[in-house]
Length: 455
Image (cartoon, rainbow, N blue to C red; front, side, top):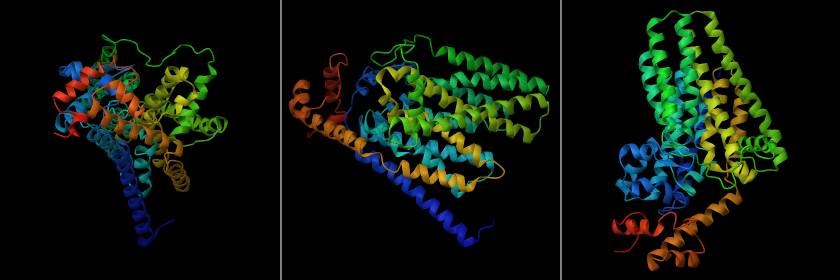
């Protein structure tokens, strides 16, 4: 069906209006919930900045089960320029997610040759308001935002036509992603990606590609292994045990995590019913992508179209496999905390790649199911329109608590008294976090909460 110019204009205008709304809503939430006050884990992972560590120590700085990676450099730059203003840091995190959405749009254009009104679904996925914990709770660009940008950027760079340049850039991004938050799971996938490239090169008798693919396969394995140098296992979850005495909880946990991404806030049984088909189709697409790669190997034919198709299916594998690996690890690491932990919004950026792969799969089909995609977009828009009343109350309390604690401490400079008078705590264990010493550091250098103090 051919649309008239007027109809096309209305559709495009509507898409632009939705896009503007999505962006404004995103930064409105950041402005509303961000507070210039270090909070909870920030007092721990910012230790590298308090202690003024060098570049490699910052890059490899471990917090909980993951490292800080390249995101820590960005944190340091913003901290140095803003006086450790965590409101500025929150806006930086929001901007990084926006950049990830832009890269995703560029990737979709690279794969299909165009960007359409339906592609407003991409920023809808990437800028979901349900991720507000990224800036409303404990801001950390290395946990969520930066890994999402790096993973999406890796996929875009995998479409570079020059094979050597593609391998070099993607190997570098892979190394950075492994060390940044839970992007580490990309490191489990990329060696298999280069392995498929080795097999394809041998099948097509491409000598130059053989050497490059073998070399970067070794580099990708070495990158992953390097992550464990001086690494200390830390589940960061009280009561962690593996395997769990009730293994079925892993399945339930994963199902709730997927349902949470689309904003469902209903009984667990219904969440299981909603999430199960999503995971099933995601696994089905993953299997199809693997079979397509195997088919390419068996065909023993190489041309531009074949290269493009192979790259597409490899990208689908990266995106879906990453989300599935992360959700499995999340269930293993957090199931001990109960099913409620599966609804945490800080994990949603790691779910985005899998859902983005969903969209790419349908959007690149020759006969696009436009009505289906539009329906799913409207459904996702409605279900994620609000962050939920219970979430609002919780994070309003955190925002107010941070502000109260800060004001009391600026008057008393007494941690215990600030905890009592504000009825709020900025860290569960002040002594372990060296809280007083670090507050003195901020005072001496007029950083963070002391930016707001009267001279």
